[in-house]
Image (cartoon, rainbow, N blue to C red; front, side):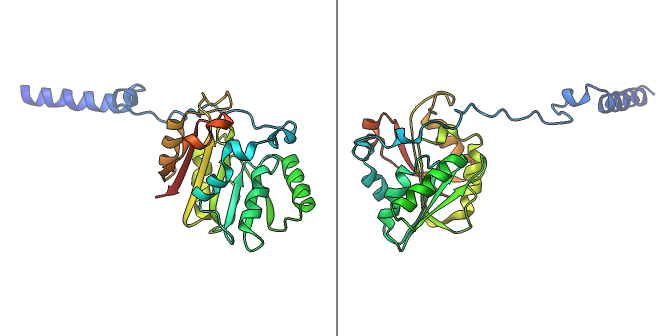
Length: 228
């Protein structure tokens, strides 16, 4: 009798626990998962685009070496994500020549208009502007051999989602470059380790880094990533 009584009490306790309001908490579960907190980001730049075309920027950023590291050569297709004034877009367009292509990706329609006018003025017929989203560059599948996010990553509101949505656009062996400065996300910079962690989440690995090349332009790191 004692055994039956104890067994009955255990069954009653188990059922009460299962259906009580606090049961989920006792079992380490909740009815709905808590939302994942998005890290801080800086607001996208919307000011005077001419500030990006300052003297000696080519030398300070070692942009020729940057393009070498990203394997940007004639005939390749390149995406300039966060293209701004199109400063890198036009340099990449000249490097890939008429047989290549450059996608200038921006979420700012004014920047899109500016780059279209610049490409027309400089007779760069291999430039195509793309209005992206905060979570996607909106690039065609299997369309690019190289990507550069130049002083842009800290402004991307949904970095992991954007990197994931970038992957279908990458051709085999495509390289993704990120140049930025250290910061807390909202002060126009983001820590290198945060970038690497987010890239890992999105399915990338670090191939190379050339931080010393970008120090003269007050940047802290240049990472070259590839999809796993």
